[in-house]
Length: 82
Image (cartoon, rainbow, N blue to C red; front, side):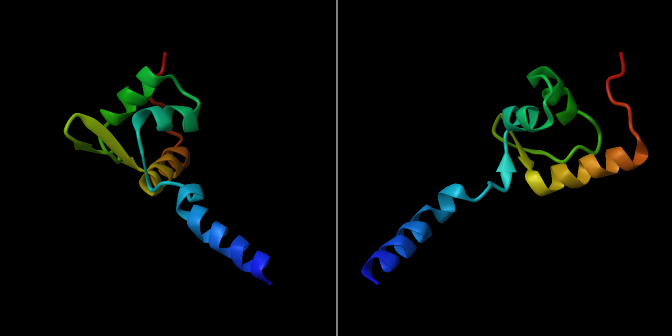
């Protein structure tokens, strides 16, 4: 019984650490989308892209990124075509 309580306490303590973050950096976005860092920075300059600045740091709400990506897929958008 005591072991079960200890396990519950440990799980509660690490829960905030293991939950996905609600906001990501440009580097995180590049990794998630499997794109180059430079391309990720270009995306942040695209009209309608969901991001904001804190100082010089670009912050991207993860939920908004997912919605934006779904919209691009629906519209079959082509960004930065070569």
